[in-house]
Length: 167
View 1 (cartoon, rainbow, N blue to C red):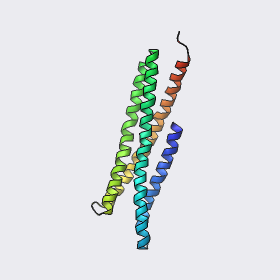
View 2 (cartoon, helix red, strand yellow):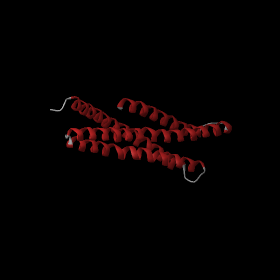
View 3 (tube, rainbow, N blue to C red):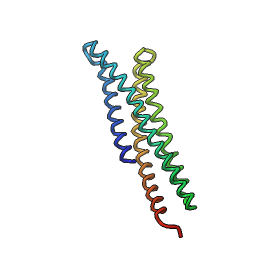
View 4 (cartoon, one colour):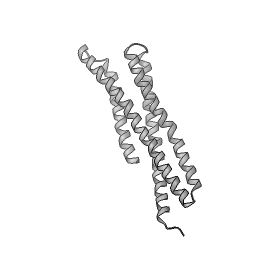
């Protein structure tokens, strides 16, 4: 899972960077007809980035839910691992807040982008949420990678424990 997550996250951050750059370039286009079409693509791309962000982070949350439940059941079957069950809970609590806010801020940024387009808020407000969302996503990716790797090690430990016949 850490490899899949890193691949998805790399694409996410590349798309995010492209949409941020397109927002800066949008105001620099000399021909109004081209600028209007470019603006439409910026809106579509920004919405895609917000949805893709949610997808990437929800996949991480589902992975922790599924693997955690399976490991807890396997440990309970063997009558072992209260410390491991606590560690599983701790991993989730380290990742979930970051992934949750890494999803919420880009959604707010996309909504504020529409509001900025219609002159309800200023562009710097939209840009502020976009940049905050990018920073949160970079942090969430780093934190998720750390704990996904720890989760993978724990899965291997539990699998090894289950491979040994009971005495």
